Image (tube, rainbow, N blue to C red):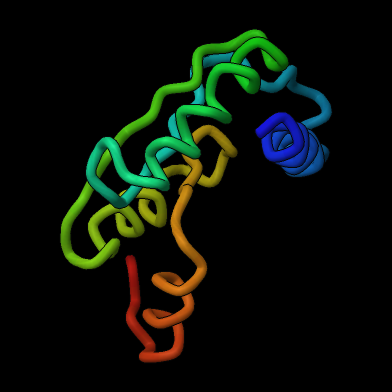
Length: 106
């Protein structure tokens, strides 16, 4: 799990590059998990949240939004401001299937 948290921290740091004038993160980070609490994705998100929170110095909140075969959680993230404070932790099969069928999440 340490490797996963390091990879996520590196991705967040890379995504924050264009925001170099600002210090990132300035507020809490929200990870939306489109599955119910207690499942594999939820456990993975919680395993990453604590080390990520310590590394970035901000609170990382896990927001479980099950339903709609992951569309509900995906819509929440797609409608969030594109500032890097709202992330989606989902399975690749769920997001790939909706993309293949042309589902629009906004």
